[in-house]
Amino acid sequence: MRRLLGLLPQAEPRGADRVVPPTGFTARLTLLTAAAMAFLAVFALALSLASGRLADRWAEALARSATIRISAPAEQMAAQTRAVLDILAVTPGVASARALDEAEMRNLLSPWFGPDLPVDTLPLPQLVEVVETAGGLDAEGLRLRLAAEAPGALFDDHTRWRRPLVAAAERLRLLGILSLVLIGGATAAMITLAAQAALAANGQVIRVLRLVGARDVFIARAFVRRFTLRGFSGAVLGTVLGVAAVAALPDTDAAGGFLTGLGFQGWGWLWPLAIPPLAAGVAFGATRAAALRMLKGIR
Image (cartoon, rainbow, N blue to C red; front, side):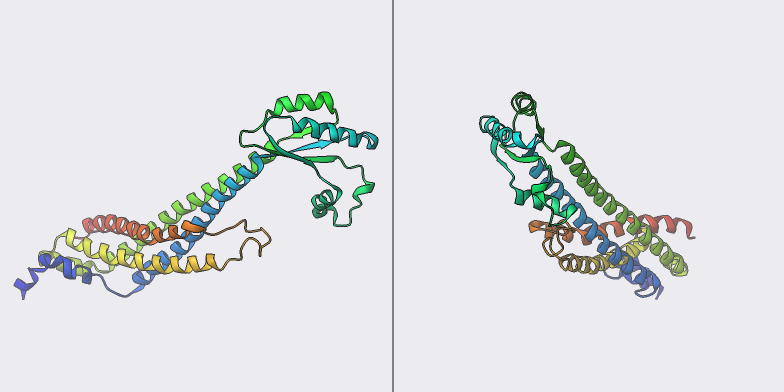
């Protein structure tokens, strides 16, 4: 019998992970932790990708649009509006320009003042919408021409609005990436604790294995394989649930634009597939480090 047990180290590939108990709180803790962290990772990944799309969309939409606000007495408003449109017609870099009518002005102000705003009785400025070409226009030169020929016109290229919005979206993307890093760290910490608990609970088994000739590498491999499989299985479950939850979110139209397109689009749906292998890698590294460290203290 002792001779057969002495062959244990040579049978590593087939029965190494049998050293670790297949059930118990460490198994449930590892599975639950991996599933919960993978579920959160899906949402953090969706937030990061959606924030990137939002930043690109805001930058593109605002970079090529501008507004000219004309403030003048009622008897001069029409003349200054025509002068502004004539200037824009010959300005390089302007793709199109048009003056907003009363209906469009009412739609712009209705979120703040309601739909029944009497636009025709209020001294509102005239707005001119400007769409730039891909090459853009000379903003300073246009401002000088407007000051000379239409003193009541003020050119606004939306820079003060665009930069904070794009910066906010970029920060959201960084927060999503940081969340993924923190989730990975928390997963590693929890799996390390579970592996240490399993090693401590099986101290007597480890001593017997050493008596029959098992090396620390073999014992560590047993725990690493079992906990890596548990981490991978839990991550698969959490990823499936997370993707299903993201897919169940209402779209932008149904949510009134509030969610700003949170979720995955196109090839982005393939990104969650990377979560289970990454979780398995985290479990492998954390368990191996914990096992080798704990085995040195068990004599």
